[in-house]
Every structure is written in structure tokens, then in C-alpha cells.
Length: 172
Image (cartoon, rainbow, N blue to C red):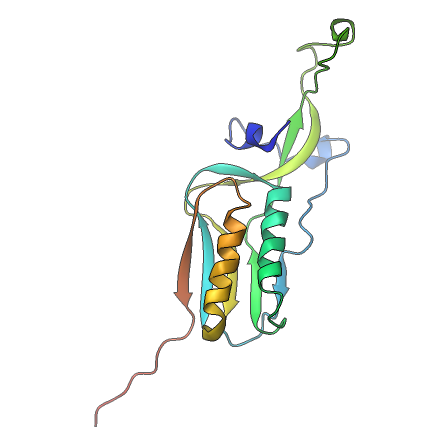
């Protein structure tokens, strides 16, 4: 099955891993990278524009794309966070589609399906990724988020949130 078959969320999410034998592990290696203690100027957020399910391998591909674009920066120059967690178990009832398959298939009998992956259900306005950077690295971080958005099955927007307020000048 392809990822597009699971893009639109339908029905109740199946999240009870204790009832599924062999529930798959998430492919996301790290949910945060970089230095969280640094004094950053701007936070960039990648925000979803629609209601969709994002598979865990798509989230990992987007995270890798961001890290690759920011690879020439040092680990102390940015802080990346993946803000969604793939907890919905995706199932598939595999059917045999070869010659002579009519004697081997069960059809819809016991059609619960086997677990094939995980997905995160995302609604409109959900923050997917956050990058905290200094002012001089702002354009590079925006490019990284644009590269990550091409890996995701939803249109996204980039929101810029200032972390520091400009100093106010008082008149005497």
C-alpha cells in the first residue's frame, strides 16, 4: 500500500499497542537536536494547513532534510524539535493479486489487518517542527523548513516568532 491510502484520517485512531502483536516502532530517530540552552533570537514554526495523517517515515524524512540543510552550522547555532508524535497504528489487510489467488485468499473474513506503520493525526494549525536560531541564521532555517515541507503530505506555512523583544529607548 502507498502512503496516499492513509493520508485522510477516517474512523477512530487505533493507538492501543498492548493489543497489537508486533506493533511497529517509530522511525523517528531523535525528536530534538541542537543546543536547547542557547540564547536564540527567533523561533520558526512549520504549521499544517490541513487535516491529515502523516506517516512516521515522512516525519523522519523531513527531520533529516532540516538537519542536512543546517549541517554547516554548529550544534550550538540552532535547536530543532519535532512537535508531533506518531501514535496511530496503521493496518493493512493484504490481498494476493496473482494468478490462482482465488484459492488462497480469505477475502473480508478476519479483515482486521496487520500493523504496517505509525502515523500522527494532524489538524489545521498544528505545529509540526520548531527551529530556534539566531538572526544571522534565519534565512538558512527558513530554507530548511521549506525543504522539509516538500517531504510532507500537507501544505504548510512558516511562522516567525521573535524570542527577544527589542530594547526600548526612554526619553529623558
